Image (cartoon, rainbow, N blue to C red):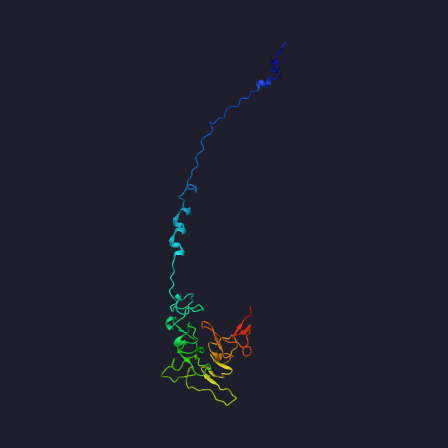
Length: 280
């Protein structure tokens, strides 16, 4: 006999039939539309008109402003007179830039007031430079080189080079109508030379500051002074140096006594061609 199993299955598992779960549907009524975000002036990405956006403001972009481009600005420098630094001939009024790097001069017209041109009628060492007037007792060859307007060329023992003084023949004179006369470069009342003594006494020479022995002294602003050693400032006069050699700088503005291993050795370094050199 065929027996059906379904009643038994139903009786054995009654809970399987009754366990259906009902899930309520979600309530969307309580939800409201969210307010839209205001893309106002704080949104830099969408506001092309913000004043802080310098990339879009050509008025503040130095790269597009031709008035601020130094690469296109032309600076015109007029030619310089003598003595001024230069690199090219065209930079100089004289049309010549020296190898020492200064504009040369052709005459006094190429120089500033209070200067003279080291060439031609006012040559001293031929540097072609504009040099300032020299003070009393400095070396000179013409009156125009001295502030006083007087170059005394007598009794200097300097091979024809004189020294700037208070007065000089052909230059500035002492006040007329007075008892003063020009004596050795100074205006004095009564002019007396140096005493003459028989040998072996030195033969003294007279200058503005007194009588001096050319073998051991020079005529300086403080009176007769013993000659100077290597590298000393010699004021463009050989007579100031133990070596009787005053060496000029390339621009003619300065001068120093030369060196000699016997007469005037270097205090530092070694003597080479009259100049003290430092070993490197």
